[in-house]
Amino acid sequence: METLDKFITRKEVAKKFDVSDKCVYLWEKKFKIPSLKIGKSVVYKKEDVENILLANLK
Image (cartoon, rainbow, N blue to C red; front, side, top):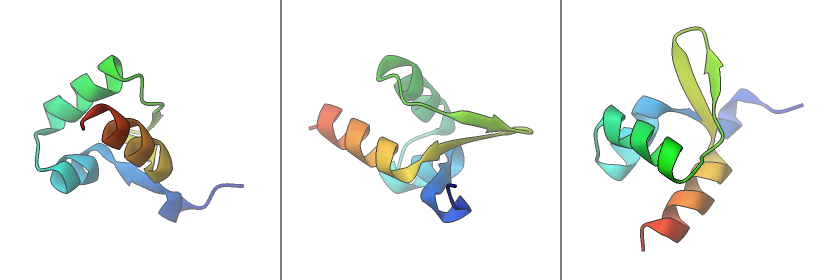
């Protein structure tokens, strides 16, 4: 079972990469980053975000 510390919110991704929440949403669609919706929040696996974005933003 996954632990919660392996997940990151859209706001946390935006802060980490110094971009807007909307930009993270667009990256999610463009780079097909898997996400989960929990209530009103969208979360991603930290590992997925780092691997996909770092590979595509270089």
